[in-house]
Length: 328
Length: 268
Ligand SMILES: Nc1ncnc2c1ncn2[C@@H]1O[C@H](COP(=O)(O)OP(=O)(O)OP(=O)(O)O)[C@@H](O)[C@H]1O
Ligand SMILES: [Mg+2]
Image 1 (cartoon, rainbow over the protein chains, first blue to last red):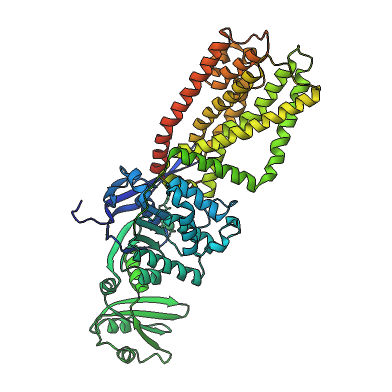
Image 2 (cartoon, rainbow over the protein chains, first blue to last red):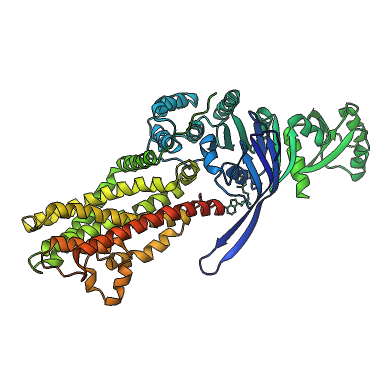
């Protein structure tokens, strides 16, 4: 593809699932999980893939980590094709799918790691030392010899992570690494992810949480219904949606004429209207400093119960706008 | 940071898989009881069944019950472990590792052969105890060696079966149909020559058919099995076993590719 060597590069990756139901009378359903994904991830970066349920995040993660073949297009990791060079890639990449499954529950965390260390080919001489080191790093040392079935959800997640980095992968794929974790464990996990980047690992991370992407990922893409709908830095994505500032006006319903008046204010790029029970919220994306909350209040004089707030446009706004637009 | 060079080897993976099978068994040793009861029951039933049928009835009883209690574990144990891998969600990280899945299966097959032999030992002890003495064996060492070989030949079929479990989560369904036919067809309980003639060619597809016939030739003076006799039986067993191993080696590669195409690794 290009001369520059990206850690991950995809061109028009598609994936179709044909699933069959029933044994004799088969009902075939056809799902286009990915509809042509183009991405490029720099070496040593954390790249975030954000998207709602069913967007195709897991599907793309599995394709990049050689667990699923794409139906079309091409994907390179470390410059090697994930389909034809899977054997070369497997020892060099780590994958954390997370969740409650994926571990042998009846044996200890340490034995799980030993087993996968053997399958992944961690040099025998190094095995025990490396396992101890990683258990300490994910803060599981004291629970290492307990059965995994006794672990909490967060501990299982840590064990998944430990397995993912056993071999010091050059690229690590994390599918929703903090899902289901309490805030403290989630914070620790994010800290660990950042420390890995300091070690030079390239990280490809999917998440539902905007703040997580905002906190961790200098570069990110938003995936919606199998398509990348935006791909940039957090700051530029804010711009993309039409402004760094957001004003919110809330009252018991607004007239159409009032909304049009707001729309005519210079610098207002977009207005989203949402109902909250009896109340309505208008969200205004504002490009310049010219529009202040008082300007909004001045245009809405008939609402004694009016509340106007100003805040920075968050990634969550960007995300909702983009995913919304796709939906229309 | 220096990336670690992967030093995976097939032997190491096979041993790791054997080890995890043992650890999982030890984690739940209550399975020991049902897996010991079945051989005892088979031994007693078979003892009653063959009692009085000639001077070598003890050997018949041991062979019948021994195979009954061992074939299931050896033949389906590794497939069952694969369906557990699906259920636990461990099939994905295993397939994602540099180790070809076949070697994970081989480790489990070794464990199944070991625990199958343990079942065989129980049968032997029960029948000897019931009859008050060991059977007359013309060549005990040859018998023991051939017995282990029959188990391995059975396991070679098991490896091929296990491929189905990787292939689809519906493998258990296929297995249930084939199960009964298989153990009658290979002569686990009765010599195959007692079956209707037309079934023989089908039986010959399975290595244990040959191996068991050879075993009876060795253990029972005057036994009349396949007309071609002991040595050709042995050759047939060896040939069919090798054929199954070759099939396993070639289909596993394709099965692994198929599941990556389908994306059904986490379904169960
Ligand atoms: N094995 C499969 N068979 C059939 N359809 C599938 C399969 N895996 C995924 N899909 C479909 O592909 C689409 C994308 O799924 P995917 O799991 O990649 O989404 P996701 O972004 O990871 O969602 P979530 O946030 O819920 O994890 C969905 O419509 C899903 O139903
Ligand atoms: Mg997902």
